[in-house]
Length: 248
Image 1 (cartoon, rainbow, N blue to C red):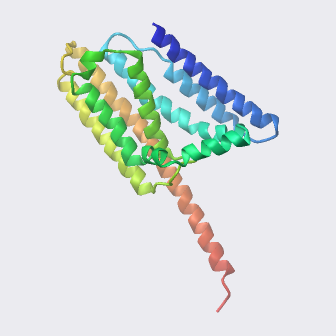
Image 2: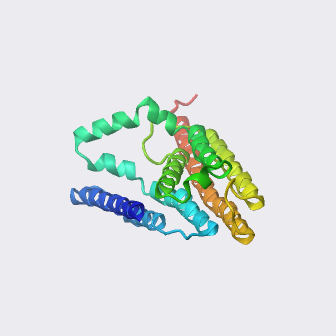
Image 3: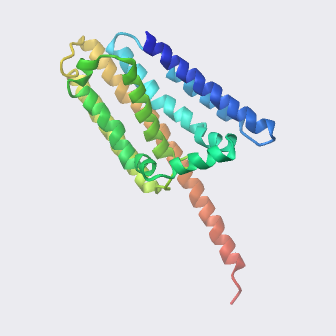
């Protein structure tokens, strides 16, 4: 009970901090699209959807908290907002943290994919799920690894290195495959040490499989749109170079 209250309090604090930052920007005349406020609030709302005692309810919360909510939050570009809203001294310190080697390693797409997908395999295919149950800190872990992975794939906020589209697409495909295989194994057999009704187990596994597919397709669309926009910018620059070149 206390863990859930803390979870809700942190989510509401994040929403209040985001809106305070957006208000500061607009108050001094800077532009910050209102759509980002809406998307961030939607992400917080999704993260607060409670689970149920069933395995299906647990898996629904997993998909919402660990996959959908991170996509919505990352689309709102909270780190960019923070960098623009805080004082100059705090901005310099934050940039040093974001530009550090550990941060660069964590947001490298293959590393983030292994941390996110690997932790799920460790949770559901060992005795870990039976040992810890549905503890609130487990949901925090699922959310943080999902947020890290989504940040690494989308690359919307300032990061240490700009990973290429091929690296990001490969990491996304690898994580999606790991999710799909894990869901199929759960459809056949429950996590070790856990007794589940067959219908509940199968419904939860199907929710993980198809729900994960929907979110991962959304991530793929984001990467594809970024690639298309980058190609368009490259073609514009190439045409300008040709136009500026002296005639033969």
